[in-house]
Every structure is written in C-alpha cells, then in structure tokens.
Image (cartoon, rainbow, N blue to C red; front, side, top):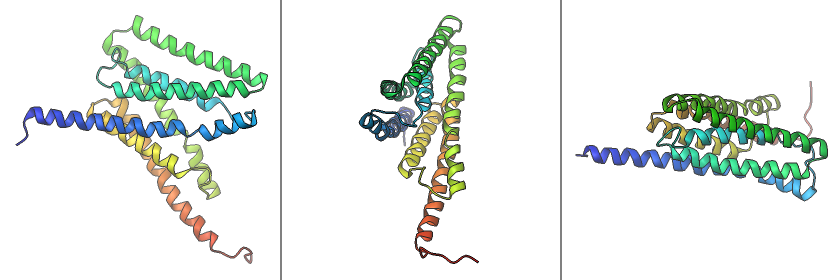
Length: 236
C-alpha cells in the first residue's frame, strides 16, 4: 500500500515529467523557423517573409515567462524555463530579420521590438508596484491566457487553407505533431499544478492540434489517392 508521502512523490514526478516533456516539444517548435532564416541569410534578403509572427511570439514568451517566475506564480518554474528559451529564439530571429530587411521594414521592426519591450516593462512594473501577490498572479495569468489562446488560434488560418486547397503542403506533419504534444504536455502539467491559467489555453491548443492532425491524415490520404489517377483525366 502506497503511503501519502509516496503519492506526493509520484504526483510530483509526473508533474515534472509533463513539464519537461512540454519544454522538449516546445524546443522543436522554436527550431522550426531555422530553414527560413537560413534562406534569409543565404540570400541576404527577407524577400516576402513577415517579421510580425516573431514579434508576437516574443511578446507571448515574455508574458508567459513572467507568469512562470516564482515572484508571480510559485511552483511552476518549468513554464519560465520554456518561455525564457523561446524569448531568446524569437529575439534572435527578429535581430536577423532586422539586419537583412530594407530600411523601411528595418525601422518598422525596430519600432515594434521597442514597443514589445516597453509593454513588457509596463506589465512588470504594474504587477510589482500596484498589485499584491494573489492579484499579481491573476493579472499576469489572464494576460498569458489571452496571449496563448491568440497564439493557438493562429493555425486556424492554415486549417482554412488546407480545407480550401485540399492540400497539406503548408501544414508540415511534424510541426503539427510537435504543437499537439507540447500542448497536451503543458495541459497535463497545468492539471497537476491545478493552474487554470496553464491548462485552459493548452487544452484549447490540444484540441486544435488534434484537428490539424486529423486534417493532415484525411487530406494526405486524399492526395495519395489523387496521385494514382492518370495525368490526363476526361471531363464531362
């Protein structure tokens, strides 16, 4: 028969395992833009790529990093670690983008970067100076939930594109799988920590991840069936 201390130890182990898994799967996502930025550096041009996703990604990582800090939310340091790594990656991508952008876009991206850093500084100042511990966690928690839900909703544009074109060309399988695994890991981590600010947005992310994987399976199968048809097909 397992003692109460044994149950606590097992519970803690499972919680940490879920958080570490979430960190690992998130790391795969952070690496995914590397081919894009390798192309930018190779061609010494940003071409038609947009830097806005990385600006938004940096803001999201900074808010969630602050939420995971012990001074805001004790006991969820794995949220802080994953978002600190994410912030470094996003900032690196933004710097590369600025270096190779033409002057007009360079100025715009620098302005947006300064705006993000200013907003984050304001959030930190307000949460430390104006709010006590419980209200501080609520304030930053609601901001992180809004940011995460917006981030998880962004693949809906890709989902719409897949349905419209009946092609999974713009929805890489391993990227969708990593997003789902990261979301489900942090959903479990949030449940173990009894923290709705973690499990609610990641629960939504898990559902959207399942939708993407189902669509991938369906439309990749359709594409394979279509590929067996003759190159010239008669039309009525």
